[in-house]
Image 1 (tube, rainbow, N blue to C red):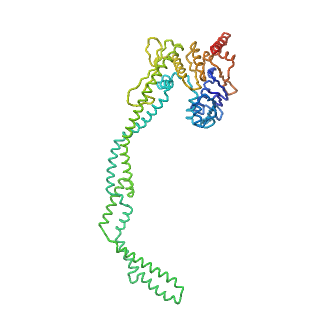
Image 2: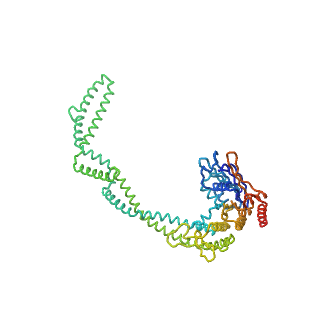
Image 3: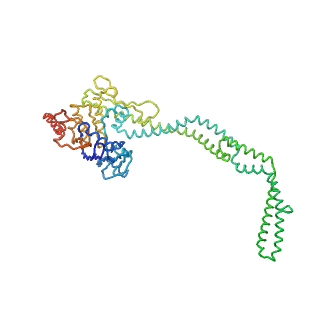
Length: 559
């Protein structure tokens, strides 16, 4: 149950603390006094979108706080405990909107997302707006009302889970099938390219090594000629470097007996002689092992030509051809797997359909049973609300077809016959504005009776109703409050008189600022407000007597 509503700097409300109690509470006041801003504040606290326009002028932020007693709400308490928000049966919800349009939400002083706030508060408060009769004309809203009344939500969730699984699999299947013809063309191209690459046996080729060999063979004559010349200069010629070094070493060695310090010089020359001799042996061996082979050169040149041609064709470097081949093999394998995936998805969609339809049929049966009970109850209430010949029907038609649908395979239609002898027709084609308001109220009150939501808010749902019917509407809302808290915004004295608690909203002007105030009316104040609502510029003794009688009559009935 909602214990307290507090508002700070929201629109025309500077500061408000509102304590609420069990039973039926009405909010009344002159048009434009600010009743709607209270509902706006509730909506924001329950998770509706916010903008900077909600913040009172010249203020940094607006704030709305709701305090709930959840001791009689085990489901809500369990949710709080599972999400570590538990506060011993009490819950504080806070919504803060900054002047920059940003907002924050809190449950028991812990920050939460708007989605989390909405999921939780749906269990606590239900708002029936003054335009509910317009949404009632929508087929989806009629389906939702029937499901809520018949408590088919658990089964509906199973149906929708099957539908969503089928939808995901079906979407992927359609996408793959759509690409299948393109894939076949791509597969043919891949196979051709792979055959071309595999014929080269690229795994045995090292492009860089081939290039080095090709370069060497192309310059082999120059290598042999230059190598032989340098071999002569180093060793074979009469005046080779080796012979000159050998003579120098011999001469300097003879001088060691006169200059021992030349020993280190001779040691270095001796090492140089050995190094030149080893280099000569390796150079000679290299030159003797080389052989000009035009056939080998031509073969390598041909291989390089093929690799370079393919690299240009595939727009890659020659050394990347083998990696390209592996990538093409992977893509081809994926295309082959796509065919396997199509078969797998075809099986999956069949399985989901087979799971969906028995559940959908069971849902149809439950809806049809609920429809019979609902139409009887609403028809009865319509008669009580001044439509003695009114008949309300709920038609549940199962749609043919093999394609699963969201929310089941049923088309739910509310039908109405307002006069004797006229066949029932869809609600949108029969009811007038006043009739539609009464039918809407009958549906809301009837479907609300079986709900577990502890707090229900009705925003001028009695518009278009007056006289004795308005009193009956007030009685119905009063009866509804026996099991829950009902908050009702109304302009009808007949409805206001049925409330256990009467709140009055008034607008006050302070210098250059306007603000709304809400106060609880005492008994005599209720008489005055009821008299004002009864009409007339001047409140006469007769009007006051009428108002007092209405309130006394209500109290007598309740006692």
